[in-house]
Image 1 (cartoon, one colour):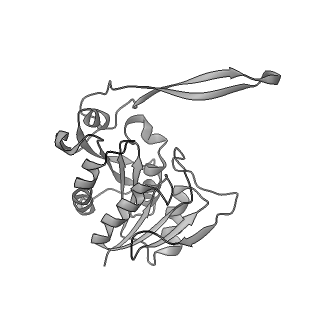
Image 2 (cartoon, helix red, strand yellow):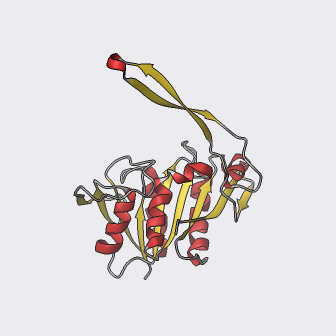
Image 3 (cartoon, helix red, strand yellow):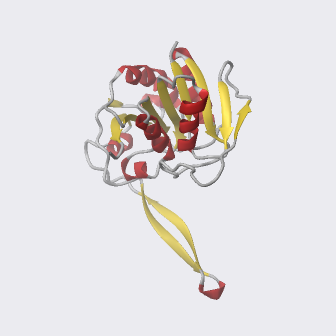
Length: 237
């Protein structure tokens, strides 16, 4: 039986990881090792100078062994591979992230970063993301298909599959686009709003302006146009 390790960066109680684990059960034995709370935008960070705690927890998918962690998503993958799944997993799935991971946003993504941690260990990994909305029609209709397809598609060392599902209604889905390049822009053009405080301190708040000006042939463009985006992401070597 295939061994599948699942993590995310939205926390072990998030809806996305529950849906991902439920779908993955069809393809093997599933372990979930995920943060005990929100850990978005941590990229590939691991914990070196502090201790990390892991706790076995009840999980709302029958037959799934689950652990919550005080560490980062990449910590969860390291612990899962080295300590939980004996003789290491066959696959690591990360997600389903609440919000797209495409374009320049990928560099910050702990959904992608934790999948890349698996790739470093030589494990076949797929990152799954969807729009930050409550419309999951496309994801729920195509998740198992994409999972099954990409489990069989080879990857080079230190490389992962990155899948993004558009947040449109199923009837508005235009199809699946493969081999999408990573766009050189993101969904938001960020700026910092400044507020002067006492003693010369300045408080900064991130403010993002929505951007749909995505280049053709990219992951970002596919999502804007209502397609499922599939592409590869390479780790630094």
